[in-house]
Image 1 (tube, rainbow, N blue to C red):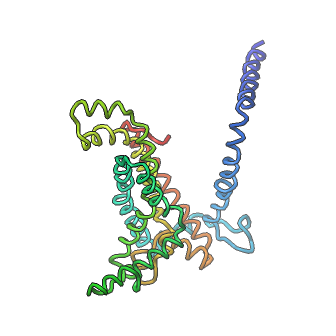
Image 2 (image 1 turned 90 degrees about the vertical axis):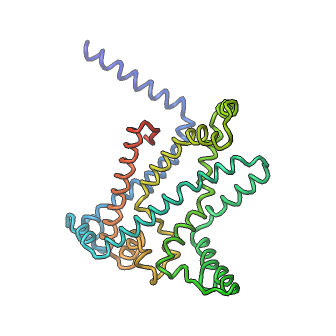
Amino acid sequence: MRTVARAAPVGLARRSRAARIWQYRTIYLLIAPTLVYFVIFAYLPMVGLQIAFKDFKVFGGMWDSPWVGLDNFRTVFSSEKFPQLIRNTLLISFYRILFGFPVPLIFALLLNEVRTRWFKRSIQTVTYFPHFLSWVVFAGIVINILGPSGLLNTLLLDAGGHRVNFLTNPDTFRSVVVLTGIMKEFGWGAIIYLAALSGIDAQLYEAARVDGAGKLRQIWHVTLPGLRPVMAVLLVLSLGNLLDAGFDQIFQLYNGAVLDVGDIIDTYVYRIGLLDAQFETATAVGLFKGVVGLVMIVTANHVLRRMGQRSIW
């Protein structure tokens, strides 16, 4: 009797779960392509991470190559190049967060104050557009502007100045990378802040005006507190990409003259993985980068929860 009493609720629960799935079958059908996409292109390729622990033989294949433990990681960490790669990657990522994180927020605050609808939409369209350009196209525009015979150097020479090699000078290359990255993405990044601004209760602004608050005080006491959860989540996601300094951009802009300041982990993985065919070493570097990113995002999310802020899980 006891066995039957336990089996009945389980059977009912399964029928109830199946009934709920059937009830919301349209939603599950909409979600299914996304799940299939991530399973095929995100989770199944993780099987290939095993070559980071193997002496990979191309003709032997991934499964028949011999295991070597952590030898590939020791090779990477003992390389004289590795400290320089970490320094370049961290510096470029840190500069991007420091100078690039506030720009979409400030732009969204300014755009939110524009009352002329056509002007506001025109500015939004112009600033969103660079996001849809690939770095191949955008880097070509940057080279045509900042290159030795580009627009900026032509203006400098016409004004009686000297030619400046922005893209081959180690002192200016990181600044060019950070600045062009901000220019390409700040309009797109402002979308999230504009969406969050539309969700702030208008009565809070009305109450602030009744109390005599001017525009700046309304932004400080109403707008910024309303945007704080969104800012916290975006900052956590930025910290998770700390070792992702942007392969596409660096690959299109760097050259041999700025290799000491522009070579990052992703470009190193490209060279040793595809050009030198050291697939196991490249995989070890990529796995190290992924683990560090995971640790960073989990730690930052935990800190946010301890501070009472909204976290991403």
